[in-house]
Length: 191
Image 1 (cartoon, rainbow, N blue to C red):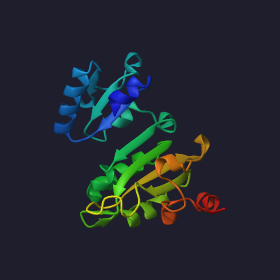
Image 2: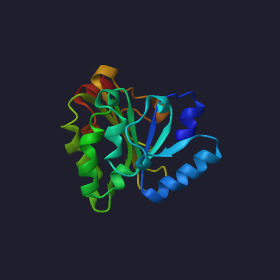
Image 3: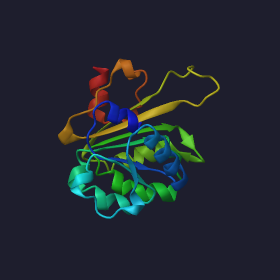
Image 4: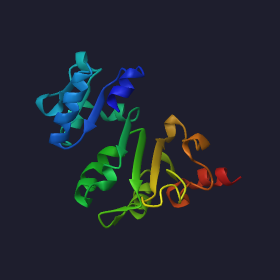
């Protein structure tokens, strides 16, 4: 994903938060592709000269040193199944940090490891007062009969605009999850 963003012309700082072993693998493949990536644990405060870099982080403590709170409002947090497959303690540690991002995009299963993600995210929505929230299923119920149905959860800070429900992304009245969507947005979809 990081290589794709840089290929598309992204020139900012890109943070990857993962387990240490996964970070080493990601660093290997990114460097092999000619994209510089640095292990965040080896850095202090981010110098100005390294603004356009990929930082590989494995502890929450590294993020605040390199990403100011004000900058988070104009940054995105992506968690493709990772955040919602984490245990409850890990989610609780990361959640306050994630809530400051301007855009939060998660993909998730309905439940994982005995945690109902629909219930979890519905409770979390109440603390995302600055965000417009939209959630929808990845595909229709009979998409893959042997696989659980996946979902998208998109939260956008009100200052940045509102999320768009696009049919090209399989988002529409029949796939939106009303309980995980801002009421005004759900009402707009139904009108």
